[in-house]
Length: 394
Image (tube, rainbow, N blue to C red):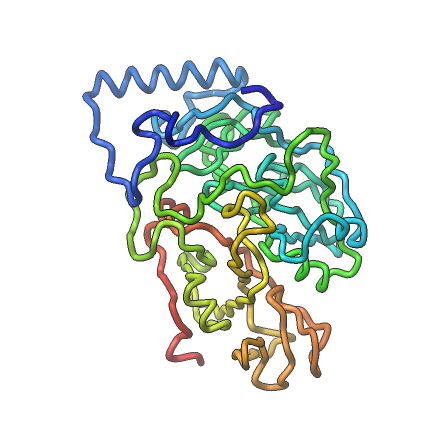
């Protein structure tokens, strides 16, 4: 596959027999030792052939866990992103379209999934800081990181490999491999290092546009010819199967249940969209810290219909600290609207007060994700699933 090829993985009908497995997947039987050694050797040779700078002697995972699917950079990262005004983007981007909302130092940008499904990585500078905005369609994981590693600025590309069906990135400077969902370097010079997570949120373009009047939107003028707006993973989020094998994970939720994920104070938590969409607001403690989770309708899936705009509504979710100027606010849903109990101000899913006495105030966003359950649970098996507000909300 060349850089002009689409990122759509091989269809199940043409993939190897073991490329599509029910989830949760049964653990793969352990081959005899000599077979493992041979497989590790083959994997090491593959990586060294495709990444000449990589040091495979430094690694935190077995190389056989890495599934090479397509050549490096067959899915091209965007290294010189261009941006449009909200008005310009509104000419082609629907209000319900999913975007990654990211703001740094007053610089707010939206990265449409109709572009990211084809590129997965954007190397950018936002608010004067070098950042990487990423999206793995197979996990529905939209994550932003700092591009600074040990004081060095890096740029990233798509390795063409997966681990537990999750995007593996690589940096051009050292060709270290990085696991997208955990941010961890897993093979190469920087093994053990973890990228700094930055708050980013999957919302609808309409929600982004309302919250950030001066926001900018990633342009479809990427330098590549792609069918932006079309979904190369048609109906992917409708079934219970992953496209590639994954390790065993908890079946507490269905594999592709969307979950709002958090990791605070050494505890991991997940708020299922099925619960959030009913309650709209959930207040809880995670790792000993107070958290409030919001949900609102209006965002469509990027992984359903052949054309994203025709996809089903899945809604948007976000997690925030409930403290404002040192005071703990209590939130509730009133006829589907998010309000705080003290002032009756209304809030949006981006944690912004949109009307009432607190209009214009902003809750502190927490680093969170809107992943598929399997993707989070396979890497974070100790996750606590939160279905309702804590009984003791003191």
